[in-house]
Image (cartoon, rainbow, N blue to C red; front, side, top):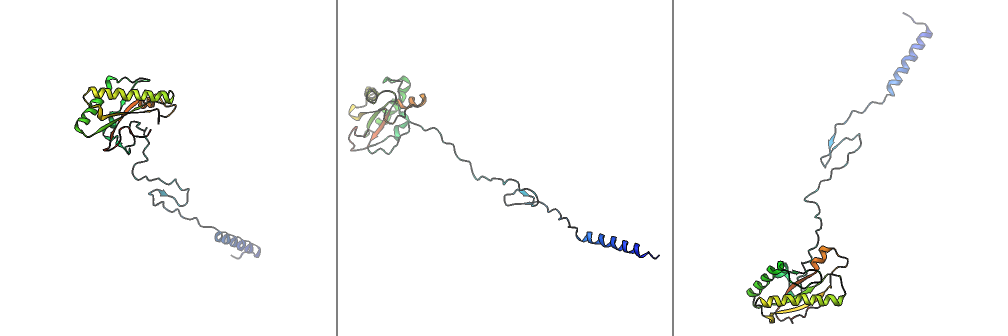
Length: 202
C-alpha cells in the first residue's frame, strides 16, 4: 500500500524521533555488591559510609586510684621505711594516746628489731594540717615519744630508738576526714649503718 507523501513524511519523522530518544538514554549502573573493608566493616560503594569500627588491643586505660598516704619515699638518705611501712601507728584527733587496736603493729616492730639486732630505729611523729606549725611540732613529738616509751616497755633498748617530729609538714590543707586520719600517725625508719640518729632533715 502506498502512503501519501504527507503521511510518509510524518511516519519518518516519528521514527527518527524514537531513534534519537533511544540513543540519548543513559544506562543504569548495576548495583555493586557490598565489599568488606580492612576493618571488617561492610561498605556499600554507592551509599553513605558507615562509621569505622574501632578495634582496641588489650585492656583500656587503668583509672588512677587514691594514693596510699602511708606509703612514703623509701629513698631516704639515712634509712629505709619499706620493711615497716605497714606498721604506721595512727592516732585520734589531737591525741598522743596509743589505741589498743594499734598494739599489734608495735609488736611487729619489736619482732623486727629482735630479728635485726643491728637495726637502729627512728620514730617520726606526724599531724594533720589543723593547728599552728608550732603546736603540731609539739604534738608530733608527743606521739613519737609515746611510741618510743611503749617499745621500751616491750624490752627494746632505748639506745636503739630515736624520735623526730615532722608536725604537719607535708599534710595537705583542707583535707578530707579520711585523709586527715592517715596524717595523724607515727612512722618508722630503719637507719642505715653510720647514720647519725635523728639526723634526717625536716
